[in-house]
Image (tube, chains in turn blue, yellow):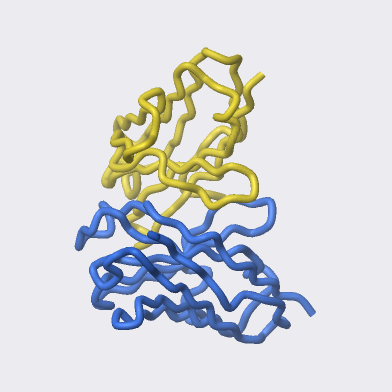
Length: 124
Length: 110
């Protein structure tokens, strides 16, 4: 079955850290560019970070730059998001998302496969 | 404040056509491709339209996308009750070196 399954969410205090994981199955993970997108409760979608298939290109939203680190292990069909110095405004459902274009150029990417998401709550 | 502007809501009766606008700038929509996502309550948002006007397999033909200059539109023709959802546009932004989403449009079927 083609799916992305996130894990690692939970309750953390402000300033704390959390590491999200995404396990891919049914896809050629090593050929896919991957992303993290989040959605705060009752709010819209916000792109967080992207990583190309070979990890050559990595991008972050300004809101998380310097605090979050995206990585992947293609041999294990896994995507990660290390989140440090967490703030209340980082509270959201975090989705693992695949780029469906396969393009080397971000401008052509689109998000065609989404996980069910994992909830991160930052609160004291 | 989102880089892409969408109306907060849109509505129509069954069978009508509803159009959702997405206004951007030269650094995002005008220079790059636009994608649309449909989100039902409590679920992840599947891809609805990609590369401005392409439908993934399984998406009904009554959903169509277009782009002109720095604006894009999503049209839902033959509106059905199951189309009640939030709709988001998205594009790469060259100035931000990142993806931007619109603030979302809630479609209500009257």
